[in-house]
Structure formats: C-alpha cells, structure tokens
Amino acid sequence: METFINIAHTQADLKQEKYTCVDLVQHYMKQIKERASLNAFLEVYEAAALVRAQTLDEKLARGESLGKLFGVVIGIKDVICVKEHRVSAASKILGDFESLFSATAVERLLAEDAIVIGRLNCDEFAMGSTNENSAFGPTRNAYDEQKVPGGSSGASAVAVQAGLCMAALGSDTGGSVRQPASFCDVIGVKPTYGRISRHGLIAYASSFDQIGPLTKSIADAALLLEVMAGKDDFDSTALQEEVPAYSQQLHFGRKAKIAYVKEVMEHPGLDAEIRANTMQFLEDLQEQGHELTAVTFPYLSYLVPTYYILTTAEASSNLARYDGVQYGYRDEEAQDMEMTYRASRTAGFGAEVKRRIMLGTFVLSAGYYDAYYSKAQKARRLILEATSAILDAYDFIVTPTTPTTAFDLGDSKYQDPIAMYLADIYTVQANLVGMPAVSLPLFQHSNGMPYGLQLMANRYEEASLLAFAQHLMEK
Ligand code: GLN
Image 1: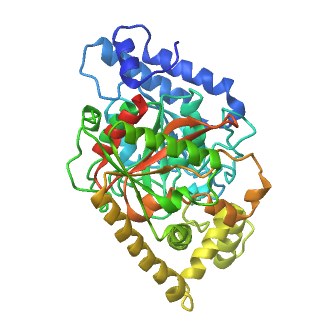
Image 2: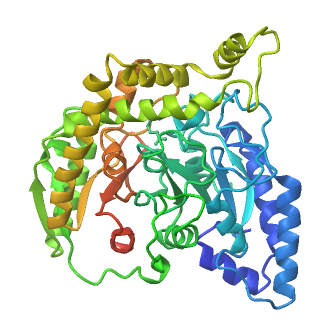
C-alpha cells in the first residue's frame, strides 16, 4: 500500500476498489507491529477494527451512501472513552476499567464511518510534555528514538508521523496537541474551548480541556473538526453555534493581518535558530503583502504560573474521584475506608500526578486560596482581555509552537518540574483564553529535528484559522 497522503485520496482509492477497508486495517496493524519500539499504542482493537472494516466494505459493495470519514483509520488518545474498550489515562489507577459509553467525539467519528484502531499512549492523565509520565513507558519520537515525542498526546503525534494510522485524536489543556505536533512534524489543532464536546474525555482541568485532531494535512484536520464539533446535550459547555463546513472553506482569499509578540520573540529561552527562522518566515509573508505588526503583551511571564495554579486546582478536584472505590485499582490490604483511599491513590498515581494534586489542593486550601487561586483567576481575566485586544485588531497571533525542538529522553534538565513547565510558555495562552490555535509542521532545525509554527485566532474563528493554515502549508 502506498504512503498515506490524505483522507480524500484514500477514499477515492477505496471507491475505485484499489484496496478495501480490511486491507487498510491490516496494513496499519502491520505498521504498528513493525514500529512496536515506538510504544505508541497501548492497545490495538484488532478484532473490532477488522469487523468494522468488513462491515464498511459491505456497505460500499451495496452502493449505500458513505459517511464523510468512510474508511478513515483513527487512533484515540487513551483519555477519550470508546465504548466497551478499556480506558486508562495511561495510569495504573484505572486498573482494567472498561468504558460503558463512547465520547461524543468518538460517536460522531463512528457515525461518519471511521474505524477506531486502538488507544494511544500519553502522559498520565494528560499531565506532561514528554510522554515520560505514562505508567506504561514512554513513547519515542519516530524521527529519533532517543528523543521524546512531546506530550501529553505524544503517541497521537507519533502514530500519525510514523504512519500507524491516518489521523489521531489528542486532548489539549495547555498544548498537548500542538506541542507534540511540533516535535513530530504533524499538524495539531486545538479548537475554541467548547467547540468539541468533552463528554467522554477524562477530565484534567475542565475549563481548559479540548479534544483536537492530529493529522498530515489541514484538509483532514478540518474534516475531523467539522464532524466532531457542535452542541451536545451531555456537555453544557459545548458551544451551541452552528458548525461551519470547515473542509469546504479552506481558501484564504485575502491578505492577513498578522501580529507577533515582541516579548515572545525576545524571550531568552527561545532557541536562536527557531527565532531567526520564524522571523524570516514572517518577513516573507510581509513581502507577499500580508500585514505584519509587532505587538507587546505584558503578561508573558504570568502565563505559565497562572496556567499551573488553575489547572492543578481543577485537577485536584477532578481526580478526587479516583479513590479506590468507584473505579479501577483498589489496594486489597487496606482495612478501612481511609486506608483504602490512601493506599490506592499512593500506589495508583504516578509522581507527576501526585505533585499536581498536592499543588492544586494547596492553592485551594483556606489559607492560600486568595493568595493563589483567586489571584490566578484575576490574572486569567487580564490575559484574556489583553489577548482579545490583540485579536480584535489582528487576524492571527503567530509564535513558534515551542521554544526548542524535542528533548532527549530522560534529559536531566527537565527532571526539574519548573524547567519542564516553562517549556509550555507559548501554548498555554490559547487554553487560558479559550481561543483556537494550530501548530503547523513548517520547519526543520539544523539539529535534524522538526518544529512548528503556531497560529492563534479569536474565539470561533477556526474557519479562517484553518484557511490561513492551508495557505501557509502550500507556500
Ligand atoms: N504540558 C502541559 C501540562 O503538562 C500541557 C498538558 C496538556 O495540554 N494536557 O500540563
């Protein structure tokens, strides 16, 4: 089977009977086995995916009308529920818990004839930037197996990068779709907060979390987004607005007003080559007639602290439900309720998850609530106002997605959690303000690793965001 190009191409081949859905699934299962060292899939739904492919082949043979995602083989980050399959959030605490229902996003993919091939590794409860926080071992970057793929949706990026499936779902609370996309040379989209229902997404920080697609092309990302998006009775934060047909609106027929943030480009943590190439890229755009303006954003150094105070607070509350009683893993030795909680959570959660639960509990505690949690809420408001002011005047804010390329596995510099958190500096803003952003695989560093360009747009502006992204990918 030839290398995957895009969904439309594969669907044309399927309709011309060049191969079948069963062939496709078998092809991807073979690729997954051959690249087992990447440790991308936690589970492949071998039997279920083949049965599904067979059903779809029969549907085609009967001449029935086919869904928009007919034959699309998709991998799902292991924080998104698929009915009657295990879901673990890459944690031991969920034990062998099996989901009773599918996430709304997954239901919608299936309703359009997609095939879910399995669940993908990630950082435990989506907390991390390297995939090393998984209880099931790190995923490796297919560019260089000694490098991390990023996180927390690292394996979702690797699965697309290495051709283990056609597209993947990730979740993005502070960059977890875009940062691994940048490290792995694929496209990653974080929609407007609420664009895709969170029903069936295991919660990390509920006012930040969004599901997003990782793909090889903008057309595929647009198609997946339009299928998954839209109101949902199971999630009252899901946007009520009609969902535009993004995949039909990918022509950007005008000049863009682009802002870049001076403080971002001058940041001492930004790799010099990434800085120079991003600036060069922006100046080229200006030469082509797009308007380029340097703006100031006074809160850059507040983004990461605000993000980590609020997300850990929300996480400490969301993760309280894993108590050894309701779900998954329970310590069998414990004699009473208190010990059951304590022993189950001690053994079930990894170090980073524990750190965040403790941080979050601390910032919410009576004596510190005003000093941290409520102050961070105020900071979030100021960040929103300043970001909105820029995006009311300009179409897009452009930044590098990440200040560096992929780290080495086990890099000692990042054993310090603060150093690791600071690497999220460019991605957390979109989640703090609920705005959509994409990472585009446009660059290769002289160190051999890829890195991305991030575009952020105003709320609800995915259509122009994706159209401009498409324009840049064609450039
Ligand atoms: N790296 C960020 C964190 O560790 C982002 C995580 C995410 O988006 N899920 O919180």
